[in-house]
Image: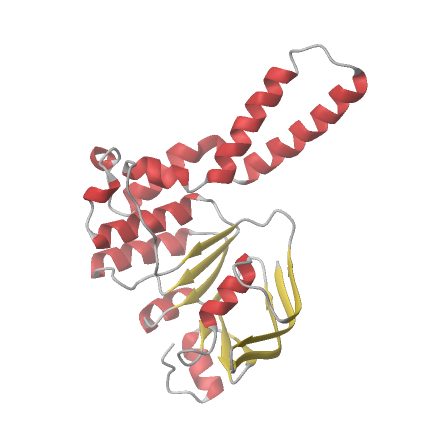
Length: 257
Protein backbone atom coordinates (compact mmCIF):
# COMPACT_ATOMS: atom_id res chain seq x y z
CA UNK A 1 0.00 0.00 0.00
CA UNK A 2 2.78 2.44 0.96
CA UNK A 3 6.47 1.71 0.48
CA UNK A 4 9.37 3.83 1.74
CA UNK A 5 12.62 2.70 0.16
CA UNK A 6 16.18 3.74 1.12
CA UNK A 7 15.03 6.96 2.77
CA UNK A 8 17.60 9.47 3.96
CA UNK A 9 16.45 12.45 5.99
CA UNK A 10 18.37 15.01 8.00
CA UNK A 11 17.17 17.98 10.09
CA UNK A 12 20.12 20.33 10.41
CA UNK A 13 22.95 18.35 12.00
CA UNK A 14 20.57 15.59 13.17
CA UNK A 15 20.44 12.52 10.93
CA UNK A 16 16.99 10.93 11.28
CA UNK A 17 17.11 8.16 8.67
CA UNK A 18 19.90 6.43 6.77
CA UNK A 19 18.82 4.15 3.92
CA UNK A 20 15.68 3.31 5.91
CA UNK A 21 12.93 1.23 4.32
CA UNK A 22 9.39 0.53 5.43
CA UNK A 23 6.50 -1.35 3.84
CA UNK A 24 2.95 -0.69 5.03
CA UNK A 25 0.62 -3.55 4.15
CA UNK A 26 -3.13 -3.22 3.50
CA UNK A 27 -5.17 -3.86 6.65
CA UNK A 28 -2.14 -3.85 8.95
CA UNK A 29 -2.17 -2.08 12.32
CA UNK A 30 1.30 -0.86 13.10
CA UNK A 31 2.82 0.86 16.11
CA UNK A 32 5.64 3.30 15.38
CA UNK A 33 8.04 3.38 18.33
CA UNK A 34 11.42 4.79 19.27
CA UNK A 35 12.99 7.43 21.50
CA UNK A 36 11.70 10.99 21.50
CA UNK A 37 13.15 12.89 18.55
CA UNK A 38 13.83 9.74 16.52
CA UNK A 39 11.62 10.93 13.67
CA UNK A 40 8.27 9.22 14.21
CA UNK A 41 6.23 12.30 13.31
CA UNK A 42 8.58 12.94 10.39
CA UNK A 43 7.59 9.55 8.95
CA UNK A 44 3.97 10.72 8.89
CA UNK A 45 4.89 14.01 7.23
CA UNK A 46 6.92 12.16 4.60
CA UNK A 47 3.98 9.89 3.82
CA UNK A 48 1.55 12.82 3.50
CA UNK A 49 4.01 14.92 1.49
CA UNK A 50 4.32 17.66 4.12
CA UNK A 51 8.07 16.93 4.11
CA UNK A 52 10.32 15.58 1.37
CA UNK A 53 13.06 13.00 1.88
CA UNK A 54 16.63 14.07 1.10
CA UNK A 55 16.89 10.93 -1.02
CA UNK A 56 15.06 7.65 -1.51
CA UNK A 57 11.62 6.81 -2.82
CA UNK A 58 8.10 6.85 -1.40
CA UNK A 59 5.48 4.94 -3.36
CA UNK A 60 1.77 5.09 -2.50
CA UNK A 61 -0.89 2.94 -4.15
CA UNK A 62 -3.07 4.86 -6.60
CA UNK A 63 -6.11 6.63 -5.13
CA UNK A 64 -5.09 5.79 -1.55
CA UNK A 65 -6.95 8.09 0.86
CA UNK A 66 -4.80 9.04 3.86
CA UNK A 67 -6.21 10.50 7.08
CA UNK A 68 -3.64 12.17 9.33
CA UNK A 69 -4.38 13.15 12.92
CA UNK A 70 -1.72 15.19 14.70
CA UNK A 71 -1.72 16.77 18.14
CA UNK A 72 -2.07 20.21 16.53
CA UNK A 73 -5.73 20.23 15.47
CA UNK A 74 -5.54 23.81 14.21
CA UNK A 75 -8.08 26.57 14.59
CA UNK A 76 -11.71 25.50 14.52
CA UNK A 77 -14.37 28.22 14.44
CA UNK A 78 -17.15 29.62 12.31
CA UNK A 79 -18.93 26.30 11.65
CA UNK A 80 -21.21 23.93 13.47
CA UNK A 81 -19.72 20.65 14.72
CA UNK A 82 -21.31 18.72 11.84
CA UNK A 83 -20.27 21.27 9.20
CA UNK A 84 -16.70 21.21 10.54
CA UNK A 85 -16.54 17.43 10.17
CA UNK A 86 -18.03 17.42 6.65
CA UNK A 87 -15.77 20.30 5.53
CA UNK A 88 -12.68 18.20 6.24
CA UNK A 89 -13.70 15.94 3.32
CA UNK A 90 -13.02 18.80 0.92
CA UNK A 91 -11.91 16.65 -2.00
CA UNK A 92 -15.03 14.48 -1.70
CA UNK A 93 -17.30 17.55 -1.64
CA UNK A 94 -15.51 19.00 -4.67
CA UNK A 95 -15.87 15.71 -6.54
CA UNK A 96 -19.62 15.79 -5.85
CA UNK A 97 -19.81 19.31 -7.30
CA UNK A 98 -17.85 18.23 -10.39
CA UNK A 99 -20.17 15.26 -10.93
CA UNK A 100 -23.21 17.56 -10.83
CA UNK A 101 -21.58 19.95 -13.30
CA UNK A 102 -20.74 17.11 -15.68
CA UNK A 103 -24.28 15.74 -15.45
CA UNK A 104 -25.59 19.19 -16.42
CA UNK A 105 -23.09 19.38 -19.30
CA UNK A 106 -24.31 16.03 -20.65
CA UNK A 107 -27.70 17.62 -21.28
CA UNK A 108 -26.12 20.07 -23.74
CA UNK A 109 -25.39 19.25 -27.41
CA UNK A 110 -21.78 18.25 -28.14
CA UNK A 111 -19.90 16.18 -30.70
CA UNK A 112 -19.11 12.51 -30.17
CA UNK A 113 -15.47 13.01 -29.23
CA UNK A 114 -16.30 15.63 -26.61
CA UNK A 115 -19.06 13.42 -25.18
CA UNK A 116 -16.71 10.42 -25.00
CA UNK A 117 -14.10 12.48 -23.14
CA UNK A 118 -16.74 13.83 -20.77
CA UNK A 119 -18.10 10.35 -20.05
CA UNK A 120 -14.59 9.12 -19.24
CA UNK A 121 -13.99 11.99 -16.78
CA UNK A 122 -17.46 11.40 -15.31
CA UNK A 123 -16.78 7.70 -14.77
CA UNK A 124 -13.44 8.39 -13.10
CA UNK A 125 -14.97 11.04 -10.84
CA UNK A 126 -17.84 8.74 -9.86
CA UNK A 127 -15.45 5.91 -9.06
CA UNK A 128 -13.32 8.10 -6.78
CA UNK A 129 -16.40 9.72 -5.21
CA UNK A 130 -17.77 6.30 -4.31
CA UNK A 131 -14.36 5.12 -3.03
CA UNK A 132 -14.23 8.13 -0.71
CA UNK A 133 -17.74 7.42 0.59
CA UNK A 134 -19.26 10.51 -0.95
CA UNK A 135 -22.78 9.14 -1.24
CA UNK A 136 -23.19 8.82 2.53
CA UNK A 137 -20.78 11.56 3.66
CA UNK A 138 -23.16 13.49 5.91
CA UNK A 139 -24.80 10.45 7.47
CA UNK A 140 -21.36 8.98 8.14
CA UNK A 141 -20.25 12.26 9.76
CA UNK A 142 -23.33 12.13 12.00
CA UNK A 143 -22.65 8.52 12.96
CA UNK A 144 -18.98 9.22 13.76
CA UNK A 145 -19.85 12.27 15.87
CA UNK A 146 -22.47 10.30 17.77
CA UNK A 147 -19.98 7.49 18.32
CA UNK A 148 -17.54 9.98 19.81
CA UNK A 149 -20.18 11.28 22.21
CA UNK A 150 -21.48 14.31 20.29
CA UNK A 151 -25.16 13.55 19.73
CA UNK A 152 -27.77 14.96 17.32
CA UNK A 153 -28.72 17.77 19.70
CA UNK A 154 -25.15 19.12 19.36
CA UNK A 155 -24.59 18.72 15.60
CA UNK A 156 -25.44 22.40 14.98
CA UNK A 157 -23.66 23.76 18.05
CA UNK A 158 -20.83 26.19 17.08
CA UNK A 159 -17.55 24.37 17.22
CA UNK A 160 -15.92 27.21 19.19
CA UNK A 161 -18.44 26.56 22.00
CA UNK A 162 -16.83 23.17 22.72
CA UNK A 163 -14.02 22.78 25.25
CA UNK A 164 -10.53 21.67 24.24
CA UNK A 165 -11.13 17.97 24.88
CA UNK A 166 -14.37 17.98 22.90
CA UNK A 167 -12.66 19.83 20.04
CA UNK A 168 -10.20 16.94 19.94
CA UNK A 169 -13.15 14.59 19.46
CA UNK A 170 -14.40 16.75 16.58
CA UNK A 171 -10.91 16.69 15.06
CA UNK A 172 -10.88 12.89 15.28
CA UNK A 173 -14.35 12.78 13.72
CA UNK A 174 -13.04 14.81 10.77
CA UNK A 175 -10.36 12.21 10.11
CA UNK A 176 -12.57 9.15 10.60
CA UNK A 177 -15.28 10.62 8.34
CA UNK A 178 -12.77 10.91 5.49
CA UNK A 179 -13.28 7.15 5.09
CA UNK A 180 -9.48 6.77 4.73
CA UNK A 181 -7.65 3.72 3.49
CA UNK A 182 -4.75 4.60 5.79
CA UNK A 183 -5.10 6.26 9.19
CA UNK A 184 -2.02 7.99 10.63
CA UNK A 185 -2.45 8.76 14.34
CA UNK A 186 0.18 10.86 16.12
CA UNK A 187 -0.46 10.74 19.88
CA UNK A 188 -4.25 10.66 19.46
CA UNK A 189 -4.96 10.16 23.17
CA UNK A 190 -3.17 13.30 24.35
CA UNK A 191 -5.64 15.72 25.98
CA UNK A 192 -8.43 13.10 25.94
CA UNK A 193 -10.14 12.03 29.14
CA UNK A 194 -10.61 8.33 29.99
CA UNK A 195 -14.08 8.16 28.44
CA UNK A 196 -12.86 9.79 25.21
CA UNK A 197 -9.95 7.35 25.02
CA UNK A 198 -12.26 4.37 25.31
CA UNK A 199 -14.60 5.81 22.66
CA UNK A 200 -11.64 6.32 20.31
CA UNK A 201 -10.37 2.81 21.01
CA UNK A 202 -13.77 1.33 20.11
CA UNK A 203 -13.85 3.42 16.91
CA UNK A 204 -10.40 2.19 15.88
CA UNK A 205 -11.30 -1.42 16.61
CA UNK A 206 -14.27 -1.02 14.21
CA UNK A 207 -12.11 0.68 11.57
CA UNK A 208 -11.31 -1.75 8.74
CA UNK A 209 -8.47 0.13 7.03
CA UNK A 210 -4.76 0.40 7.72
CA UNK A 211 -3.58 2.08 10.93
CA UNK A 212 -0.18 3.49 11.92
CA UNK A 213 -0.09 4.65 15.52
CA UNK A 214 2.33 6.70 17.60
CA UNK A 215 1.32 6.74 21.25
CA UNK A 216 2.72 6.90 24.78
CA UNK A 217 -0.35 4.91 25.85
CA UNK A 218 0.81 1.28 26.08
CA UNK A 219 -2.77 0.12 26.71
CA UNK A 220 -3.67 1.64 23.36
CA UNK A 221 -0.73 0.03 21.59
CA UNK A 222 -1.54 -3.37 23.07
CA UNK A 223 -5.19 -3.10 22.02
CA UNK A 224 -4.55 -1.96 18.43
CA UNK A 225 -1.27 -3.00 16.83
CA UNK A 226 -0.30 -6.31 15.23
CA UNK A 227 3.18 -5.24 14.10
CA UNK A 228 5.72 -2.71 15.35
CA UNK A 229 8.11 -0.45 13.45
CA UNK A 230 11.07 0.57 15.60
CA UNK A 231 13.11 3.67 14.74
CA UNK A 232 16.53 3.82 16.38
CA UNK A 233 19.67 5.71 15.33
CA UNK A 234 18.47 6.24 11.77
CA UNK A 235 17.40 2.63 11.17
CA UNK A 236 13.97 1.02 10.95
CA UNK A 237 13.24 -2.50 12.16
CA UNK A 238 10.02 -4.45 11.76
CA UNK A 239 8.64 -6.76 14.47
CA UNK A 240 5.63 -8.92 13.68
CA UNK A 241 3.16 -9.42 16.51
CA UNK A 242 1.60 -7.20 19.14
CA UNK A 243 3.32 -4.70 21.41
CA UNK A 244 4.18 -7.29 24.08
CA UNK A 245 5.70 -9.53 21.38
CA UNK A 246 7.83 -6.57 20.31
CA UNK A 247 9.10 -5.95 23.85
CA UNK A 248 9.98 -9.63 24.22
CA UNK A 249 11.72 -9.93 20.82
CA UNK A 250 13.60 -6.63 21.05
CA UNK A 251 14.62 -6.96 24.69
CA UNK A 252 13.31 -3.45 25.37
CA UNK A 253 11.61 -2.64 28.60
CA UNK A 254 9.79 0.24 26.90
CA UNK A 255 10.49 3.33 24.86
CA UNK A 256 9.56 6.92 25.58
CA UNK A 257 7.47 6.46 22.44
